[in-house]
Length: 230
Image 1: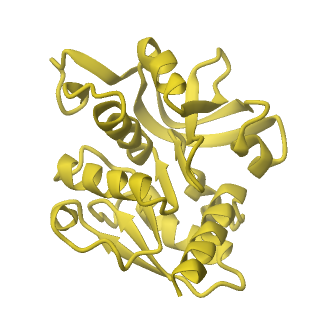
Image 2: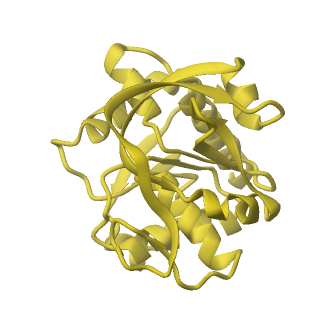
Image 3: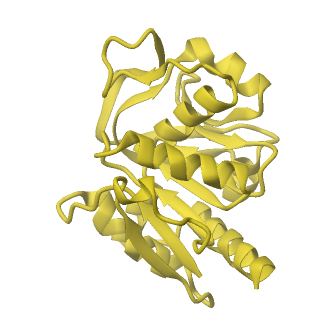
C-alpha cells in the first residue's frame, strides 16, 4: 500500500521526522509503503499507483500547483487524503478554487496581495504551541477521536479566513475541530470516504511514542482503498 507524502522533504523539519514514525505506529497489522513525493515531481507523475495521500507541513511548497494537483486528484478520485498544517491550508485552497470556483483564491503566505485571501494570517501564530480544542458534535473527526476535547501541537502561522467558512461549509467542506474561541482548526469533506485537514500536526504524537487516532484511521482507509483496487 503506497502512500504519497506530498511535500518537499527536509530532514530538519520536525514534522518530516515525525511522519514516518507516526505511520509506523499506526500501521500495526498493515503493510504500508510511504514514499516522499516532491511538489515539483507531483506536477506530472502518474498518481494512480498511490492508495493514499498525505500532504505534509513546511510550506510554501516549491510548487503550489503540484500540491494542488495531488489534492484535487485525491478529492475527485475518492482517495484517502490527510493534510496537516500546510496540507490543510492547501486542501482548503484547492476546494475554494475548483469547487467554489474562486479562481483567484489565494494564500497570504505566498501571495500577500491576493484579492481572495482564503488562507490568511492567524490572529495569533501558533509556533511550537499546544492548544486545547473542541471536536464538533456530529462530525467524523468527533467519531475518530471519540471525545469532545483534545489537545494538539502546532507550528503554524496561517489558517482559514472566517469570511469564507460559510461558503466552504455550504459546499461540503465543514469545520470539524475548533479552537478555544471557536476558530477553525480542522476540516473534513462530507461527501468523501476519507478527506481531512488539520492546522495542527498530529504526527508529532509519534515523537512521544503515541499512536494517533486520526493517523490510524488514515492507514485503515488506505488499506480499504488498496483492497478495493486489488
